[in-house]
Length: 97
Image 1 (tube, rainbow, N blue to C red):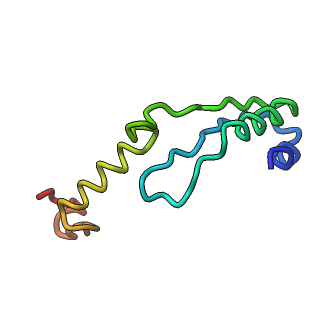
Image 2: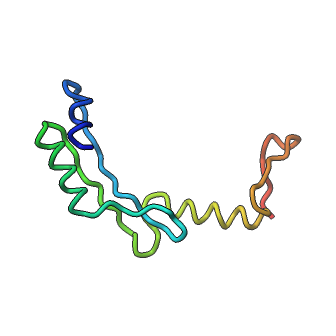
């Protein structure tokens, strides 16, 4: 896929930030193995494109990018009874309970 990506953007000045997937409980997806991520980045680099790998921090406590927000949203939804619907008469604001 890295070679196909390099071919697709040939002649375009660009940079690719590679961000490994952050698995969380209940996720159906897995993170790509580290060696595969490094190979992907190297292929892009060999084709003249910057491709830094942005290794996530906080994986061990589910504090990687977006995970804290996701957890806080789940907690908020559970407090307001699931998928809260905005009150049309209140400018779309959902009151926390």
